[in-house]
Length: 305
Image 1 (spheres, one colour):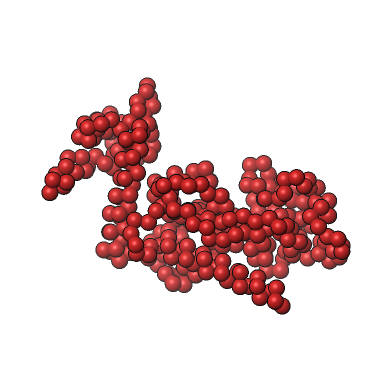
Image 2 (image 1 turned 45 degrees about the horizontal axis):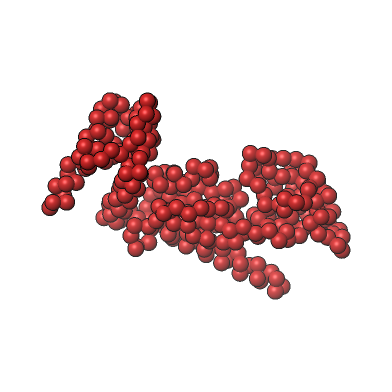
């Protein structure tokens, strides 16, 4: 009961603390909570008085978490997740409702969509919410609970996040069926030969396509998305460097000219699970692993043939 009494002193102030801690801007946090900024400021000061330490660094109009505040915010996020998970379990809604997913276009096309198809067959009441990927903001969005899982080609460690490798993505050079390197490939075909033909490549503001940096290409077109690059291959007769899983998903529209020898890891990044029981993200990641296994089996079968 002593712990309950202690928490009761400031329990109602914790949502306000989280809002300010995540926004690091009093007016924005106040607007989100529907209260005035002065009232929110008083709440934060009451909380600091109750816990016996300052939680923010204040300078002029800025307010940001100090070390104690960052520690409390991390624990508060975990506590709120546990309560939310408990409510879902009580309401039997673990596999109902929204699961918020972010991934790059290529990963969405090659991996996420097939995984979502498997997920829908098993849990038809789950409603995936696909969002555009901004890798720089993905980690903070995960911590805030704005995303449930992000699929990234690059991932960095973070104690609040669980990072799992789900695949190794192989790359190849792709072209339409009418391209001369497909209809009449030279006997000595290699990447240098490919580089002399016309290419479509990502623009400067889009993710790099993992082409060898020391091998210049004959660039004819720069585009903002892989989807447009695929159309450029089919319509304009250009070459593109892309993941094999994407090139092969075009149902015969694209053909792999040559394997490039490049590969990249694919990671599932999510918040560290608080419970041992499966949740909606875990079943999605498992579906992703099944998709990867199926692709590997298909590759092995085609090599045998």
